[in-house]
Image (tube, rainbow, N blue to C red; front, side, top):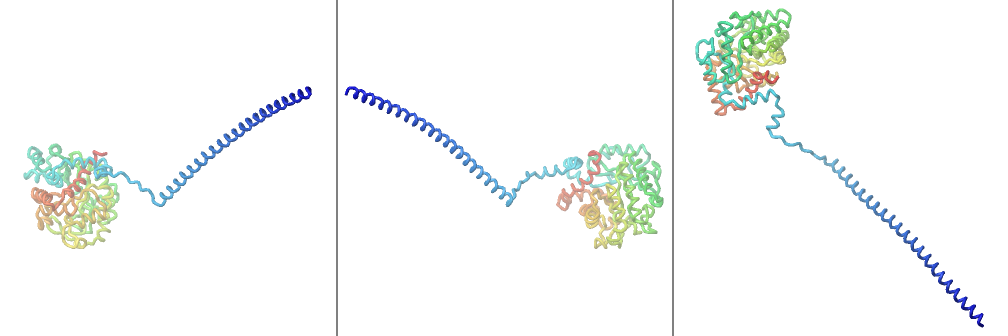
Length: 444
Protein backbone atom coordinates (compact mmCIF):
# COMPACT_ATOMS: atom_id res chain seq x y z
CA UNK A 1 0.00 0.00 0.00
CA UNK A 2 2.80 2.31 0.95
CA UNK A 3 4.75 1.38 -2.17
CA UNK A 4 1.71 1.92 -4.22
CA UNK A 5 1.16 5.34 -2.70
CA UNK A 6 4.80 6.21 -3.25
CA UNK A 7 4.58 5.18 -6.85
CA UNK A 8 1.48 7.20 -7.32
CA UNK A 9 3.21 10.20 -5.69
CA UNK A 10 6.15 9.81 -8.11
CA UNK A 11 3.78 9.51 -11.01
CA UNK A 12 2.01 12.67 -9.92
CA UNK A 13 5.33 14.49 -9.71
CA UNK A 14 6.33 13.22 -13.12
CA UNK A 15 3.05 14.38 -14.59
CA UNK A 16 3.39 17.81 -13.05
CA UNK A 17 6.94 18.05 -14.38
CA UNK A 18 5.79 16.89 -17.73
CA UNK A 19 2.99 19.47 -17.83
CA UNK A 20 5.38 22.19 -16.69
CA UNK A 21 7.83 21.31 -19.46
CA UNK A 22 5.02 21.14 -21.99
CA UNK A 23 3.78 24.56 -20.97
CA UNK A 24 7.29 25.94 -21.29
CA UNK A 25 7.60 24.28 -24.65
CA UNK A 26 4.29 25.70 -25.75
CA UNK A 27 5.28 29.14 -24.50
CA UNK A 28 8.54 28.96 -26.37
CA UNK A 29 6.69 27.90 -29.51
CA UNK A 30 4.18 30.69 -28.94
CA UNK A 31 6.93 33.19 -28.44
CA UNK A 32 8.74 31.98 -31.52
CA UNK A 33 5.53 31.98 -33.51
CA UNK A 34 4.66 35.42 -32.29
CA UNK A 35 8.11 36.61 -33.18
CA UNK A 36 7.87 35.07 -36.64
CA UNK A 37 4.40 36.49 -37.12
CA UNK A 38 5.57 39.92 -35.96
CA UNK A 39 8.52 39.77 -38.31
CA UNK A 40 6.23 38.78 -41.13
CA UNK A 41 3.85 41.58 -40.24
CA UNK A 42 6.64 44.11 -40.02
CA UNK A 43 8.07 42.93 -43.32
CA UNK A 44 4.65 43.04 -44.90
CA UNK A 45 4.07 46.50 -43.54
CA UNK A 46 7.38 47.63 -44.97
CA UNK A 47 6.50 46.21 -48.34
CA UNK A 48 3.11 47.81 -48.12
CA UNK A 49 4.54 51.16 -47.18
CA UNK A 50 7.07 50.94 -50.01
CA UNK A 51 4.35 50.01 -52.44
CA UNK A 52 2.24 52.80 -51.07
CA UNK A 53 5.00 55.32 -51.47
CA UNK A 54 5.78 54.02 -54.93
CA UNK A 55 2.14 54.12 -55.86
CA UNK A 56 1.82 57.68 -54.54
CA UNK A 57 4.94 58.74 -56.41
CA UNK A 58 3.71 57.08 -59.58
CA UNK A 59 0.39 58.80 -59.24
CA UNK A 60 2.13 62.13 -58.60
CA UNK A 61 4.39 61.64 -61.60
CA UNK A 62 1.44 60.66 -63.70
CA UNK A 63 -0.43 63.77 -62.68
CA UNK A 64 2.60 65.97 -63.45
CA UNK A 65 3.08 64.26 -66.83
CA UNK A 66 -0.57 64.75 -67.63
CA UNK A 67 -0.29 68.43 -66.70
CA UNK A 68 2.74 68.83 -68.93
CA UNK A 69 0.97 67.16 -71.85
CA UNK A 70 -2.04 69.40 -71.38
CA UNK A 71 0.22 72.49 -71.27
CA UNK A 72 2.04 71.43 -74.45
CA UNK A 73 -1.28 70.88 -76.17
CA UNK A 74 -2.46 74.33 -75.13
CA UNK A 75 0.74 75.90 -76.43
CA UNK A 76 0.20 74.26 -79.82
CA UNK A 77 -3.35 75.49 -79.99
CA UNK A 78 -2.51 79.02 -78.77
CA UNK A 79 1.14 79.95 -79.47
CA UNK A 80 2.67 82.09 -76.79
CA UNK A 81 3.44 85.57 -78.12
CA UNK A 82 6.57 87.09 -76.63
CA UNK A 83 6.45 90.86 -76.97
CA UNK A 84 9.71 92.62 -77.63
CA UNK A 85 10.60 95.49 -75.33
CA UNK A 86 9.05 98.68 -76.61
CA UNK A 87 11.72 101.18 -77.56
CA UNK A 88 11.09 104.90 -77.46
CA UNK A 89 11.15 106.78 -80.79
CA UNK A 90 14.48 108.28 -79.79
CA UNK A 91 15.94 104.81 -79.15
CA UNK A 92 14.61 103.47 -82.45
CA UNK A 93 16.10 106.44 -84.32
CA UNK A 94 19.45 106.04 -82.60
CA UNK A 95 19.57 102.34 -83.46
CA UNK A 96 19.02 103.11 -87.15
CA UNK A 97 21.42 106.03 -87.41
CA UNK A 98 24.76 105.62 -89.13
CA UNK A 99 27.79 107.34 -87.61
CA UNK A 100 27.51 109.98 -90.36
CA UNK A 101 23.84 110.64 -89.61
CA UNK A 102 24.62 111.04 -85.92
CA UNK A 103 27.17 113.72 -86.78
CA UNK A 104 24.77 115.37 -89.23
CA UNK A 105 21.87 115.43 -86.78
CA UNK A 106 24.08 116.83 -84.02
CA UNK A 107 25.07 119.67 -86.36
CA UNK A 108 21.51 120.47 -87.45
CA UNK A 109 20.01 120.31 -83.95
CA UNK A 110 22.11 123.26 -82.81
CA UNK A 111 21.13 125.53 -85.69
CA UNK A 112 18.52 128.27 -85.26
CA UNK A 113 15.88 128.40 -87.98
CA UNK A 114 17.46 131.51 -89.50
CA UNK A 115 20.71 129.62 -90.09
CA UNK A 116 18.86 126.58 -91.37
CA UNK A 117 17.11 128.63 -94.03
CA UNK A 118 20.27 130.47 -95.05
CA UNK A 119 22.01 127.10 -95.35
CA UNK A 120 19.80 126.23 -98.34
CA UNK A 121 21.35 128.94 -100.53
CA UNK A 122 24.45 128.98 -102.73
CA UNK A 123 25.19 132.54 -103.83
CA UNK A 124 28.00 134.67 -105.18
CA UNK A 125 30.28 136.62 -102.81
CA UNK A 126 28.84 139.79 -104.37
CA UNK A 127 25.29 138.78 -103.40
CA UNK A 128 26.51 138.09 -99.87
CA UNK A 129 28.40 141.33 -99.34
CA UNK A 130 26.38 143.69 -101.54
CA UNK A 131 29.48 144.82 -103.43
CA UNK A 132 30.13 144.87 -107.20
CA UNK A 133 33.21 142.66 -107.27
CA UNK A 134 34.82 140.55 -104.56
CA UNK A 135 38.46 139.51 -104.69
CA UNK A 136 39.16 139.26 -100.98
CA UNK A 137 37.36 138.24 -97.80
CA UNK A 138 37.57 140.73 -94.94
CA UNK A 139 35.37 142.25 -92.27
CA UNK A 140 32.37 142.66 -94.54
CA UNK A 141 32.45 138.99 -95.53
CA UNK A 142 32.81 138.00 -91.87
CA UNK A 143 29.90 140.20 -90.79
CA UNK A 144 27.60 138.97 -93.56
CA UNK A 145 28.38 135.31 -92.96
CA UNK A 146 27.41 135.85 -89.34
CA UNK A 147 24.12 137.41 -90.44
CA UNK A 148 23.45 134.98 -93.31
CA UNK A 149 24.96 131.54 -92.71
CA UNK A 150 24.67 130.54 -96.37
CA UNK A 151 25.27 126.98 -97.46
CA UNK A 152 27.82 127.85 -100.10
CA UNK A 153 29.48 130.40 -102.33
CA UNK A 154 30.20 130.14 -106.05
CA UNK A 155 33.14 131.97 -107.63
CA UNK A 156 33.63 133.16 -111.20
CA UNK A 157 36.49 134.54 -113.26
CA UNK A 158 35.90 138.06 -111.93
CA UNK A 159 36.74 136.82 -108.43
CA UNK A 160 40.20 135.62 -109.50
CA UNK A 161 43.25 137.81 -109.92
CA UNK A 162 45.96 135.35 -108.92
CA UNK A 163 46.44 131.96 -107.35
CA UNK A 164 47.61 133.32 -104.01
CA UNK A 165 44.76 135.82 -103.88
CA UNK A 166 42.20 133.10 -104.59
CA UNK A 167 43.60 130.79 -101.91
CA UNK A 168 43.64 133.54 -99.30
CA UNK A 169 40.12 134.70 -100.11
CA UNK A 170 38.66 131.20 -99.88
CA UNK A 171 40.66 130.33 -96.77
CA UNK A 172 39.49 133.47 -94.97
CA UNK A 173 35.89 132.90 -96.07
CA UNK A 174 35.96 129.37 -94.68
CA UNK A 175 37.34 130.59 -91.37
CA UNK A 176 34.57 133.20 -91.00
CA UNK A 177 31.73 130.75 -91.49
CA UNK A 178 29.98 129.16 -88.50
CA UNK A 179 29.30 126.04 -90.57
CA UNK A 180 31.10 124.12 -93.34
CA UNK A 181 30.70 125.78 -96.74
CA UNK A 182 30.36 124.53 -100.27
CA UNK A 183 32.97 126.42 -102.27
CA UNK A 184 31.82 125.98 -105.85
CA UNK A 185 32.93 126.67 -109.41
CA UNK A 186 31.72 126.06 -112.96
CA UNK A 187 34.70 124.08 -114.20
CA UNK A 188 33.53 121.77 -116.97
CA UNK A 189 36.46 122.07 -119.33
CA UNK A 190 36.46 123.83 -122.67
CA UNK A 191 34.62 127.15 -122.78
CA UNK A 192 33.24 126.80 -119.23
CA UNK A 193 36.43 126.75 -117.16
CA UNK A 194 36.67 129.64 -114.71
CA UNK A 195 40.06 128.81 -113.18
CA UNK A 196 41.64 127.63 -116.41
CA UNK A 197 40.40 130.78 -118.14
CA UNK A 198 42.11 132.82 -115.41
CA UNK A 199 45.40 131.09 -116.16
CA UNK A 200 45.49 129.00 -112.96
CA UNK A 201 45.29 125.60 -114.65
CA UNK A 202 45.57 123.88 -117.99
CA UNK A 203 42.25 123.50 -119.79
CA UNK A 204 41.32 119.83 -120.16
CA UNK A 205 39.45 120.55 -123.40
CA UNK A 206 35.79 120.29 -124.38
CA UNK A 207 33.60 117.36 -123.43
CA UNK A 208 32.83 116.88 -127.11
CA UNK A 209 36.52 116.30 -127.80
CA UNK A 210 36.82 113.87 -124.90
CA UNK A 211 33.69 112.01 -126.04
CA UNK A 212 35.06 111.77 -129.58
CA UNK A 213 38.30 110.21 -128.30
CA UNK A 214 36.60 106.84 -127.99
CA UNK A 215 38.21 106.25 -124.59
CA UNK A 216 35.98 106.83 -121.53
CA UNK A 217 39.04 106.81 -119.29
CA UNK A 218 39.89 110.20 -120.78
CA UNK A 219 36.79 111.56 -119.04
CA UNK A 220 38.02 110.21 -115.73
CA UNK A 221 41.47 111.67 -116.33
CA UNK A 222 39.93 115.06 -117.08
CA UNK A 223 37.78 114.85 -113.94
CA UNK A 224 40.80 113.93 -111.83
CA UNK A 225 42.82 116.82 -113.28
CA UNK A 226 40.05 119.33 -112.55
CA UNK A 227 39.61 118.00 -109.01
CA UNK A 228 43.35 118.28 -108.42
CA UNK A 229 43.59 121.98 -109.14
CA UNK A 230 40.21 122.87 -107.62
CA UNK A 231 41.14 121.35 -104.27
CA UNK A 232 44.50 123.14 -104.39
CA UNK A 233 42.64 126.45 -104.18
CA UNK A 234 40.01 125.33 -101.68
CA UNK A 235 37.06 124.29 -103.88
CA UNK A 236 34.97 121.25 -102.96
CA UNK A 237 32.06 121.44 -105.45
CA UNK A 238 32.14 121.53 -109.23
CA UNK A 239 29.00 122.20 -111.27
CA UNK A 240 30.00 119.47 -113.73
CA UNK A 241 29.76 117.22 -115.66
CA UNK A 242 27.14 118.10 -118.26
CA UNK A 243 24.93 115.02 -118.62
CA UNK A 244 22.79 116.37 -121.47
CA UNK A 245 22.66 114.26 -124.62
CA UNK A 246 22.72 116.67 -127.55
CA UNK A 247 21.05 116.33 -130.92
CA UNK A 248 22.99 117.13 -134.09
CA UNK A 249 23.38 120.87 -134.53
CA UNK A 250 22.32 121.77 -130.98
CA UNK A 251 23.62 125.19 -130.00
CA UNK A 252 22.37 125.69 -126.42
CA UNK A 253 24.69 123.00 -125.03
CA UNK A 254 26.89 122.26 -128.02
CA UNK A 255 30.39 121.02 -127.25
CA UNK A 256 29.74 121.01 -123.51
CA UNK A 257 28.15 117.57 -123.96
CA UNK A 258 30.05 114.32 -124.47
CA UNK A 259 27.99 113.58 -127.59
CA UNK A 260 24.82 112.50 -129.32
CA UNK A 261 24.74 108.79 -128.45
CA UNK A 262 22.97 108.30 -125.12
CA UNK A 263 24.78 105.10 -124.22
CA UNK A 264 28.21 106.57 -124.90
CA UNK A 265 27.42 109.79 -123.04
CA UNK A 266 26.30 107.73 -120.03
CA UNK A 267 29.67 105.97 -119.90
CA UNK A 268 31.65 109.22 -120.10
CA UNK A 269 29.48 110.94 -117.49
CA UNK A 270 30.03 108.11 -115.00
CA UNK A 271 33.79 108.25 -115.55
CA UNK A 272 33.84 112.01 -115.10
CA UNK A 273 31.98 111.68 -111.79
CA UNK A 274 34.49 109.09 -110.62
CA UNK A 275 37.43 111.34 -111.48
CA UNK A 276 36.02 114.37 -109.68
CA UNK A 277 34.80 112.65 -106.53
CA UNK A 278 37.80 110.39 -106.09
CA UNK A 279 39.77 113.64 -106.18
CA UNK A 280 37.76 115.11 -103.30
CA UNK A 281 35.36 117.34 -105.27
CA UNK A 282 31.60 116.79 -105.36
CA UNK A 283 30.25 116.31 -108.87
CA UNK A 284 26.99 117.92 -109.99
CA UNK A 285 25.13 116.40 -112.96
CA UNK A 286 23.40 119.01 -115.08
CA UNK A 287 20.90 120.06 -116.48
CA UNK A 288 18.15 117.60 -115.49
CA UNK A 289 16.05 116.38 -117.26
CA UNK A 290 18.21 117.35 -120.24
CA UNK A 291 18.64 120.42 -122.43
CA UNK A 292 20.33 118.70 -125.36
CA UNK A 293 17.32 118.72 -127.69
CA UNK A 294 16.44 122.43 -127.45
CA UNK A 295 18.16 125.45 -128.93
CA UNK A 296 16.59 128.13 -126.75
CA UNK A 297 18.51 129.45 -123.73
CA UNK A 298 16.78 129.65 -120.34
CA UNK A 299 18.98 132.65 -119.54
CA UNK A 300 16.80 134.56 -122.00
CA UNK A 301 13.32 133.17 -121.35
CA UNK A 302 11.08 130.12 -121.13
CA UNK A 303 12.39 127.01 -122.85
CA UNK A 304 9.88 124.30 -123.74
CA UNK A 305 10.53 120.71 -124.81
CA UNK A 306 7.83 118.53 -126.32
CA UNK A 307 9.62 115.34 -125.31
CA UNK A 308 7.63 112.78 -123.36
CA UNK A 309 8.81 110.87 -120.29
CA UNK A 310 9.50 107.89 -122.55
CA UNK A 311 11.62 110.10 -124.82
CA UNK A 312 13.77 111.20 -121.90
CA UNK A 313 14.04 107.62 -120.60
CA UNK A 314 15.73 106.53 -123.83
CA UNK A 315 18.06 109.55 -124.06
CA UNK A 316 19.15 111.93 -121.28
CA UNK A 317 17.93 109.78 -118.38
CA UNK A 318 20.50 107.15 -119.32
CA UNK A 319 23.39 109.51 -118.63
CA UNK A 320 21.83 111.02 -115.52
CA UNK A 321 21.17 107.54 -114.16
CA UNK A 322 24.76 106.52 -114.90
CA UNK A 323 26.03 109.55 -113.02
CA UNK A 324 23.72 108.85 -110.08
CA UNK A 325 24.85 105.23 -110.00
CA UNK A 326 28.48 106.42 -110.03
CA UNK A 327 27.75 108.32 -106.80
CA UNK A 328 27.30 111.94 -107.88
CA UNK A 329 26.63 114.10 -104.82
CA UNK A 330 24.52 116.69 -106.69
CA UNK A 331 22.03 116.95 -109.52
CA UNK A 332 21.26 120.39 -110.94
CA UNK A 333 17.71 120.79 -112.26
CA UNK A 334 17.27 123.05 -115.24
CA UNK A 335 14.47 125.51 -116.02
CA UNK A 336 13.18 123.47 -118.94
CA UNK A 337 9.38 123.23 -119.26
CA UNK A 338 8.08 119.77 -120.23
CA UNK A 339 4.27 120.01 -120.56
CA UNK A 340 4.12 116.48 -121.96
CA UNK A 341 5.14 115.26 -118.50
CA UNK A 342 3.97 117.92 -116.06
CA UNK A 343 0.83 119.04 -117.88
CA UNK A 344 1.83 122.71 -117.99
CA UNK A 345 4.79 125.03 -118.55
CA UNK A 346 6.05 125.04 -114.97
CA UNK A 347 9.87 124.92 -115.09
CA UNK A 348 11.33 121.63 -113.86
CA UNK A 349 13.07 123.51 -111.05
CA UNK A 350 9.64 124.24 -109.56
CA UNK A 351 7.97 120.94 -110.47
CA UNK A 352 7.24 118.34 -107.81
CA UNK A 353 6.48 115.89 -110.60
CA UNK A 354 9.99 116.19 -112.03
CA UNK A 355 12.00 116.48 -108.81
CA UNK A 356 10.17 114.34 -106.27
CA UNK A 357 8.38 111.80 -108.45
CA UNK A 358 10.82 111.33 -111.33
CA UNK A 359 14.31 112.28 -110.11
CA UNK A 360 13.94 110.98 -106.56
CA UNK A 361 11.22 108.35 -106.93
CA UNK A 362 11.81 106.85 -110.36
CA UNK A 363 15.58 107.35 -110.61
CA UNK A 364 16.37 106.86 -106.93
CA UNK A 365 18.49 109.96 -106.37
CA UNK A 366 18.85 110.81 -102.67
CA UNK A 367 21.66 113.30 -102.90
CA UNK A 368 21.45 117.10 -103.07
CA UNK A 369 19.13 118.61 -105.66
CA UNK A 370 20.16 122.15 -106.54
CA UNK A 371 18.41 124.50 -108.92
CA UNK A 372 20.08 126.12 -111.87
CA UNK A 373 20.68 129.85 -111.40
CA UNK A 374 17.40 131.41 -110.30
CA UNK A 375 18.45 134.72 -111.85
CA UNK A 376 17.68 133.42 -115.36
CA UNK A 377 14.79 134.92 -117.28
CA UNK A 378 12.98 131.57 -117.42
CA UNK A 379 12.37 132.20 -113.71
CA UNK A 380 12.52 135.96 -113.19
CA UNK A 381 10.02 136.72 -115.99
CA UNK A 382 7.34 134.72 -114.18
CA UNK A 383 8.18 134.59 -110.47
CA UNK A 384 9.54 136.85 -107.76
CA UNK A 385 12.72 135.74 -106.00
CA UNK A 386 10.91 134.67 -102.81
CA UNK A 387 8.09 132.95 -104.67
CA UNK A 388 10.51 130.96 -106.83
CA UNK A 389 12.61 129.88 -103.85
CA UNK A 390 9.59 128.65 -101.89
CA UNK A 391 8.16 126.80 -104.89
CA UNK A 392 11.48 125.09 -105.57
CA UNK A 393 11.67 123.81 -102.00
CA UNK A 394 8.05 122.67 -102.13
CA UNK A 395 8.86 120.76 -105.31
CA UNK A 396 11.69 118.91 -103.53
CA UNK A 397 14.82 120.94 -104.28
CA UNK A 398 17.39 121.18 -101.49
CA UNK A 399 19.41 124.23 -102.50
CA UNK A 400 18.64 127.46 -104.30
CA UNK A 401 21.41 128.67 -106.61
CA UNK A 402 21.95 132.39 -107.15
CA UNK A 403 18.45 133.88 -106.70
CA UNK A 404 17.78 137.20 -108.41
CA UNK A 405 17.62 138.88 -104.99
CA UNK A 406 19.16 136.78 -102.22
CA UNK A 407 17.81 138.71 -99.23
CA UNK A 408 14.28 138.69 -100.64
CA UNK A 409 14.47 134.97 -101.40
CA UNK A 410 15.90 134.22 -97.96
CA UNK A 411 13.21 136.22 -96.16
CA UNK A 412 10.52 134.62 -98.29
CA UNK A 413 11.59 131.12 -97.26
CA UNK A 414 11.91 132.14 -93.60
CA UNK A 415 8.42 133.66 -93.69
CA UNK A 416 7.08 130.49 -95.34
CA UNK A 417 8.43 128.42 -92.45
CA UNK A 418 7.05 130.81 -89.85
CA UNK A 419 3.57 130.84 -91.40
CA UNK A 420 3.44 127.10 -92.06
CA UNK A 421 3.71 127.15 -95.85
CA UNK A 422 6.94 125.18 -95.37
CA UNK A 423 7.58 123.10 -92.28
CA UNK A 424 10.84 123.04 -90.37
CA UNK A 425 10.88 119.29 -90.93
CA UNK A 426 10.95 119.96 -94.67
CA UNK A 427 13.93 122.29 -94.20
CA UNK A 428 15.67 119.69 -92.02
CA UNK A 429 15.13 117.06 -94.68
CA UNK A 430 17.18 119.09 -97.13
CA UNK A 431 19.79 119.99 -94.53
CA UNK A 432 20.35 116.30 -93.79
CA UNK A 433 21.16 115.68 -97.46
CA UNK A 434 23.38 118.75 -97.60
CA UNK A 435 25.35 117.89 -94.46
CA UNK A 436 25.74 114.25 -95.45
CA UNK A 437 27.89 115.60 -98.26
CA UNK A 438 29.58 118.33 -96.26
CA UNK A 439 30.52 116.03 -93.38
CA UNK A 440 31.02 112.69 -95.11
CA UNK A 441 34.79 112.73 -94.56
CA UNK A 442 34.30 113.03 -90.80
CA UNK A 443 32.60 109.63 -90.59
CA UNK A 444 35.14 107.76 -92.70
